[in-house]
Image 1 (cartoon, rainbow, N blue to C red):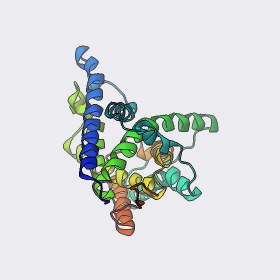
Image 2: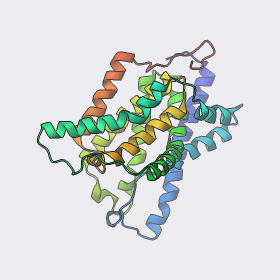
Image 3: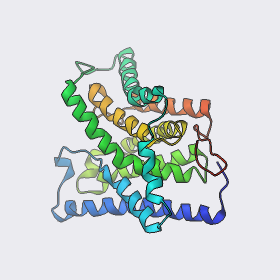
Image 4: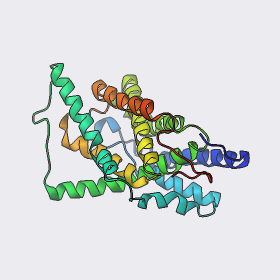
Length: 275
C-alpha cells in the first residue's frame, strides 16, 4: 500500500467505481436482445465470456475523466515486453501445469479421466488459437489488471486489490444466470467455486503484473495460457468448477501470497509508479 493525496485517492476511487458500472452497463446492453427475442440460454452451447467489455469500459471511463495521458497510461503496459524470459514461461505454461496436476490428482483418487488426457493441435491451428486468445485477453486484461488492479493497489494492498478485482471478475463472468434460461445451468456451488477460482487467478495474475513492473503483456500471455491449457488438457475443458482444479489454483495463490507477501511484488517508486 502506498500513500497518495486524498483528492487523488477520491478521484481514483470514483474512476474505478465508474469503470465497474460501465463494465456491467455495457454488458447489460449486450444482453437486451436475449430478452427481446426470448433466447433460452439453456438450449444453446456458448461461451460466457464477452472479452471486449472490460477494456472498452476502461478506455471509455478514462477518456471521460480526461486524465492527462490517461489512455497512454492505460495502454502503454501492453507493450512492456522487456522482462525476464522466465516470466513468459511461467505465464504461458503455469495454468497448463496446474491442469495436468489436477488430472494426476484425479488419477491418484481413481476418478475418471478423459481419453486421451492430453492433446496437442497442429502448429497452424495452435498459432491461430494463441493469436485469437491473446486478442481476447487484451479485451479483458486492460480492464481487470490495467485499470482495476493498477488503480486499487494504489489505495489498498495489492492482495486486497486482487481480491476485489476477483469478485468483480466473478460477478461479470456469471452474467448468464440473469438471462433467460441461464440459471438452469448454474448452481450455488458452481458460483462459489467460480468465485474461488477467479479470485485465485486474480491474485496470480496480479503477482505476474507487479513482478514484471506492470507488464500487461505478461498478464495477457497468462490469460491466453489458461485458455490454451483448457484446449491441451481435455479434463479441464468445461470443468472450471471442478473442486480439484479450484483447490489447486487456490493453493497456488495462497502460496504466492505467503511467499511474496501482500504486495505481490508491487514496489512503488518515490513518484508512486511501479518499478
